[in-house]
Amino acid sequence: MAAIATAEACDSNAALLASGDLRVLQPIFKIYGQSRAFSGPIVTLKVFEDNVLVRELIERKGEGRVLVIDGGGSTRCALVGGNLGQMAQNTGWAGILVNGCIRDVDEINGCDIGVRALASNPMKSNKKGIGEKHIPVHIAGTLIRDGEWLYADSDGILISKTELSI
Image: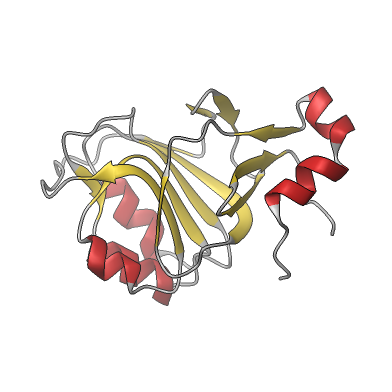
């Protein structure tokens, strides 16, 4: 899949931006992983300081999708670490967006996926299995729905109702 530059996508899709079918996330995420630019259909997950469901989804075939995790913006523990980063690479996920923290930054930076997160924190998460999959989530001022498309590069992150063409 050819990479779509987010700046170019914004410049050439004014009507989609105006209608809300293309949205720009607030610039609050740090860049991790070897893939500086990535895109794909979104799978949503809402959890809070618990990564059992994160693992469950990452264990499944990613098929070029992007896992969008709404961790409630908590910075008290990590929802994704090096093992999950490696697993996401091996199962074919294009990327992971975490509204929360990651850990094992050096390991994740060695993985051939794109990761965006608020920060890093060495604390591991709870393991209770509480959360919701495939529901609309609010992250960085934007409503994100399962099945929409995410485009990320060094300039920012876009959410599109449909797949964008180059």
